Length: 293
Length: 293
Image (tube, rainbow over all chains, first blue to last red; front, side, top):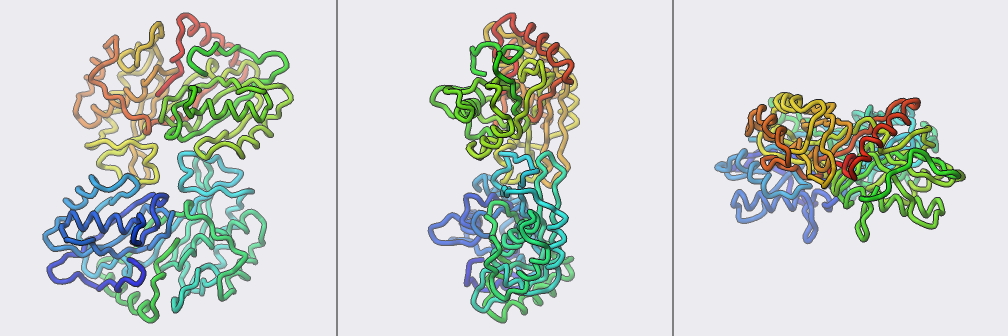
């Protein structure tokens, strides 16, 4: 959804049917999700091709769960689009597979259940930031989605520090501020583990109801400082108490970050969830509430 | 080792020490392992940097376990180099990490045990060819090292057909022929499994004492034909009986192939193994005996 785009309505307009798209992309070659004139973006690419294949006479209008920033990847991105009822989802998916570039895949397209809204019905977004430290064995084949750091990461210390941030709080210290936008979020999970693979990649999983801009990359920067011993775990409390972006926190590069999954409630609870989220977020203009970049 | 390069001696020359290098690379940007004038190759890159860092006044001379072809990747490549005894392996590894491009990593450098020869002491090479079929969920982040095929792969049928090729036999049907070079190899393992990951990637593992040119890519092509039902399993016997390259076998593209591991005997048996392998392969000029591409 582009900045300043109209709020997505709760249901498809008459004569149209809402479709759910499950999407993956290598963010390296994209200027992020949101369509921008003259720049190659994931939304721009999808909107153009869907518009053509569905013969809309214009780009399709997409609503997305997580507006990833330039260079951020996705394996489990979700979007919806309202298309003329005659457009068959399977045929559209099949045709998209033939035309989309290799760094962008639409895994499936299905008719969305009643009340489904990719953005507002989402319960949570799960991101993973992948890191190689000096105890890892970097694999050049993975280098596009893992970031190397100096020193050795203590994953238990990182998980311990992350636990201090769980729950509902103001994440202003970790966000790029936007006029009128709230930075209050509920952090549901923040755990670092060393993967049981030959590389020993450190994976930091961060799950929240929504994210403000650059939140996961800032959280990762703060936890890397703790994990390498440069900062004590208590330092996280001092950072979190800041009511504005904290200058001591490094914003990690986008290439290590991937949107892995978006969680939705069961079908029966979709509409209620979307109405609630929409109401909360309508108060001030809050374009960034599902953004991570 | 370049084509026509002299056979590597069994031990390091006086005043030098043999070092073992464990190497990984993304083959996409390389014209294969072997140094070639004017082309970017893995050997060329390593030989130049090691020559500089060890102040040899010339490129270093490397001997490799598996001479991968253009576009083929490696996670577990092994090479050796004989350097002046004063060169410390840890310091060299450290300096290489700083100068090598991101698609090439030297995981470690250690003093090689007596009798070690990266090429001739190797017991086996293990390659994996990765495939996405229509039951897979292609991940754009992995696209550089997985090849997509049409249809749905029956991994049990592929493994069954592969079992028909195990043991010592002439693999001429699967090899690009070279004058005077033997195509007799011992195939130790040939198994297809669908990975238990969200992508459902089909991984074909092929392990043999050595490989002739394009052997894994041809074997994969033949087994894909069986796996998709285009050919019956018995067809493999007909192919294998051919004394020259079989025209019905597709050579798969290099990007799906990766050299994962090279196996060596225990220290005590290294020299004996190398002497035996060297004797066997000295008869005709057989540059391709450890090659896969």
